[in-house]
Picture 1 (cartoon, helix red, strand yellow):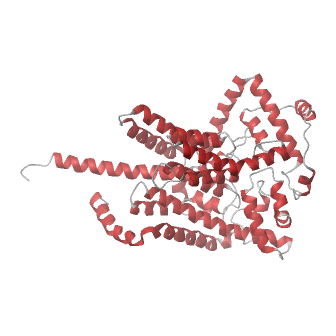
Picture 2 (tube, rainbow, N blue to C red):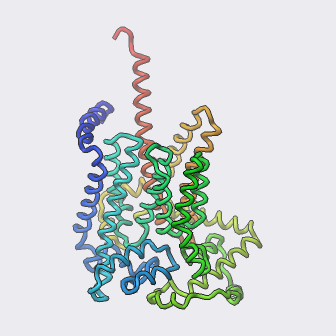
Picture 3 (cartoon, rainbow, N blue to C red):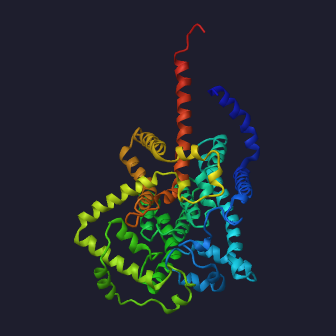
Length: 471
């Protein structure tokens, strides 16, 4: 299809899409929701026990509390939750209240079926957000096309039906970065940006309290007004500090997770001996709340053992950083290199177990090829370079450098944290990549459109400049 046919197609579709007007995101939402719902029904014969599209229920995930405990004592269970942020279990607890009269064996199935519906809603919301963001920098026709391309993405379909928090965290990340990108635009909002950052905090452990100073610093580099910085800081403080205080009083940590210690030792590749571990453990005088035992629901991880393990590992980590910082830095680089290899794998192949929907998609191999390895790396490097050149060409280079630094700080933080996620030689970087995968897609798609416009404009000007005077 040549350029003239593309222009004719655009001219034909534009009036149709103009009639849809502001309802386009809702149309994208509906199409995406119906699409994933159809795939779920179509794949039902291949599902595990006729229910699950992957091997595990939400109750089997290490990030969740037992559903029976969440139904019985939701507020107390969430109050004493310390292994993960509370957003995912809050949703599960709310859903469980709808099934008060359901027996214990059927409760997990009922809740998981509702979680599939919620996952479909999140999936459709992501598709609409992809459209809205691409539309803000390109044309409506192109944005519609790209949102449909995204809707077919196997990784998106995989995590939307995985019954854990990855898709929720990815949506939170995308929403936050979208609000951060447009905060200086007239219809941007510092309130929405702050709420999106807080939402991300409660969905994933990588958004710890130290994420917020990075956000504020990035806003300062982007020259936000002092009043807006104060407003953002106030919103974040009010919505986050009470939870940090609760965690510190109950569990002697400012983190949302008590897996933090084992991750810290993992990225510096240090495994303490039993003797060292016991010596540090003997010095722990902080007490585990007695009621936390009552509301753990016999969970495997939200326990006294993990609580102590976190305190001990944090102490050993600090000692290792102080005693041998050079070795720690070398091992952190080692972690990054190992994790980056996993990061560049196709996200839809996170687990080796069967997935009733994704394993049967005829386009999966093509998407996996584009969204991994050299194609992904080349696309990101090429279009990032092109984007940077567009700033360098402007007159005030120093000011633009500060602006660029402010823009890339939050996404740089998320990228760095997700590529420093290992526990010794074990990593899930390929799953954590999906937090940024929608943003990668939006960025590359928008840059492709801009490049196309620039090339066609150049060809048009070239033709005008060299047109024969006799014609």
